[in-house]
Structures are given as C-alpha cells and as structure tokens.
Image 1 (cartoon, one colour):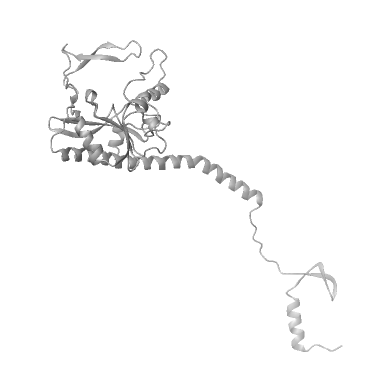
Image 2: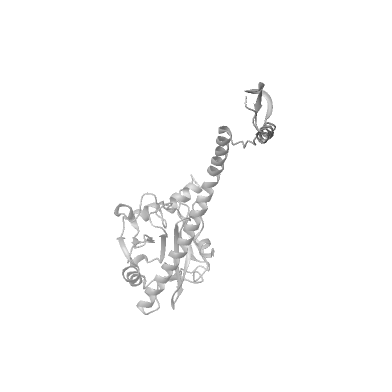
Length: 295
C-alpha cells in the first residue's frame, strides 16, 4: 500500500478530529459511526397554533367591525348633515334676496305672541285640538308667525334656486319621491312609546299617511329629499316647515340619522334663521338641534 505523505496524513488527522463518534453511522475504519456537527433548528408554528390564532383574530374582528362601521357611517352622515343644512340655509336666503323684499314666511324668532292653554282635547288621540291665550283672549291669525308670502317664496326657492329633478305635489310614495322604507312620526312614536289607551294621531304633522299621500315632496339634483309640511302653494295652510333626508333614498332613512326637520324663523323684517324642529328621533339617533349644535 502506498504510504501517505506527511502533509496528507496531517490533514487527514485534523479532519477526523472534527467528526464525532456515536455508533450510528458506519465508516470504513471501524464498527462505529460518525455523527455530523449539530446545527440550531428554528421551529415554526404548528397547524393547530395557526388555526387558533386565526380564530382569535376572526372573533376580535367580528366584535369590533360593526362598531367601527357604525362610527364611520355616523361621521359620514354628520358631514352630510352639515353640507345639506348649509345648502338649505343658503338657498332660503338666496330666494329671499332674489325676491328683493322681507319675506313673510316664518315662525316668530321668540315664540308665539302669548302664552297658550289648551281649551279642547281630542277624545280619541288625547292631544289638543284648540288653543287660546292664557288670559282668555283668542289667538290672533299671526300668533305663531307670518305666512303671507309663503307661496311666492316657495316658488322662488324650488323653481329658481334649488335644482329639482322630481316634484310630487302629493302621493309621494306612489309617484317615487319616497320609498316604502320611510316611516311617519306616528309609526316611530307608537313603536317607542306604545299607548293602547290613546293611539298616535295618523293625521298629525309628518305622519305616515301625510308624508306618503298628502304632502308635497321634492328630489334635488344631489339626491336630497325635501318634504313640505302640507301642500306646495296651499295658501290656506302655509307652514314653513320642511323635513329633509340628507342622503336621499340611501339607507338608513331614519329620523335622527338622515331624516331631520327644519323650521324657518324670522320677524317682520323677513326670514332670519333656519332652526331645528324635532317631531321624532329613532333609537340611537340625534335631534335636529343636536346636529346643528354638534361642531
């Protein structure tokens, strides 16, 4: 056998000392085995651990997402309210300016001309039918405000200031100005405070019957829906009160969320202010005044 050179023998010996003898892997020079150098092993997540983690994330998301979504929607509606309130207010004053006269179509800034008392109650609905001044005198025709110019004012407002794409003189539901999702204030109040002895008057203010069948409505170019208290140009009952759906037919179509009521206020010098008026506010919603004051 050819003998190894001294240098080769030295290298062989150095390499052999780096191997560990453990009896598991055989090698040519004996009956033992060689063990390779150990390396650090990085362990990963098991499938079960991954599934558990994903499950926890899913539960947390399911609990928090509805709250986040609701808050986002409220902020969106809040900003839309501010925009519509500003647009409506500017439109009212623009119409008055274009007519170039102080418009007599408003409630008094400081309330009625006298303190009132009820003189007759409706036996069915238990609400007041007739009123008089506390001193016993009759209410004057302009007790709550002046309305002589409402017809000409509304013609200017809806025909020359606002961009109207659809008008429903009445039958707003059948004509498409409103959808079946809208509910009148009588329905909302009956749900919130059921009173089996005295039901809510289906013919009062913005009741379900009135908004869907009797009152006039407009849809503006940006989708805003405006419902007048009464009929357009009805001089026998001119009431400068308007309910507005700030995002049109989009949901939720609820009082206190995207449906609010505005009232024109002023004096003999014309319309001075657009105020909030609250006929109803569904659970979780805000009153019109709260929305106006919410900066």
